[in-house]
Image (cartoon, rainbow, N blue to C red):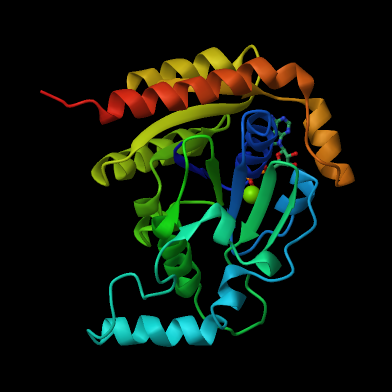
Length: 267
Ligand SMILES: Nc1ncnc2c1ncn2[C@@H]1O[C@H](COP(=O)(O)OP(=O)(O)OP(=O)(O)O)[C@@H](O)[C@H]1O
Ligand SMILES: [Mg+2]
């Protein structure tokens, strides 16, 4: 199954959607959630999981070690993927100390900003890119990637290892413009992309549908504003809202069919 990147503007509901989709997919097979947001710390709580004891970055020797491989690449030494995961990776090979899980859902963290003045987050992007590119997925396994706000991860090539990009659109013009940009960048990289409305109500949903259709990126699904989700988030509880199951299933169906049509030869 595809590796799916969820992107969008700050606070649009990326981590919420990743957590809800993981819960829905757990009934179908193994799900790995990749926390590729170098700042926020709450995804494990939204998933109802312990935070992993160490990040993938820690496992690779920390930011300085990865940073020096990046510098070597800039000098024209070393390979494009930084040889971070020699021989590729499967779900079963994930270093135990770097993952936490419950039942079919597990998670890893790429790396977090830990210290003031520690420098830019480029090594996080390089690890995320390399990790996703080298991670192999069976047909009953899904990978959901939660990203930081904005589109910097596109610039860092994180989407190279993914097959589908979900761009979240909450009710704001800024979100519409950013989704258009994200879908354009995904297309340029040869990746399938779909927009998902979030936090919508009876007034904002048709308005956004119309706006997105006009610019050629009609939504493949929508998550309404949910007081249940807002309360669970505030209480630090795992996210679940049984009333959203149909919407979640429909988004997954659209991802699968979007992948199939994207993979069909074009004339
Ligand atoms: N469908 C929804 N209904 C109600 N509240 C929501 C919904 N989706 C997200 N929220 C709320 O919006 C806030 C931001 O959600 P979330 O953390 O998922 O966004 P994000 O895009 O991951 O943010 P960031 O850019 O900081 O990573 C949270 O308080 C969350 O509870
Ligand atoms: Mg988030």
